[in-house]
Length: 145
Image (tube, rainbow, N blue to C red):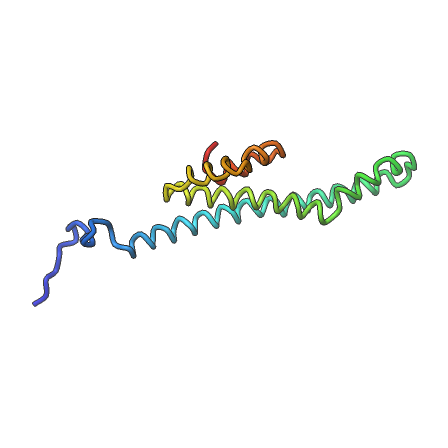
């Protein structure tokens, strides 16, 4: 005869007093899945934005085709905005910000967010990144607003 615990019995704990490792792994997997879905949800608008910018540039080029002065003045701007490198850098920047936010939340969950913040400050990278206007990346990574 086997011992059967009632369904309302408390979960058994490991000898160390913590919940089972499998439960922790499942919770972490769910958190990671949710965070990845949030990243993917943020990437889609970036792709839509790039498409809209390209369509807008092409429409504007068609409208100023018979205006030589406007065409001369605006061509460098159109060229810069339609460069794939500029679009890629913008998309990568937004993606990096989202990924760093995810990593920051995971580190804070483990209690390591302050360590990363102190490390960046100690190396002087935090002030350099803030000076370059990338302070949001450090705040995303450390989990601080």
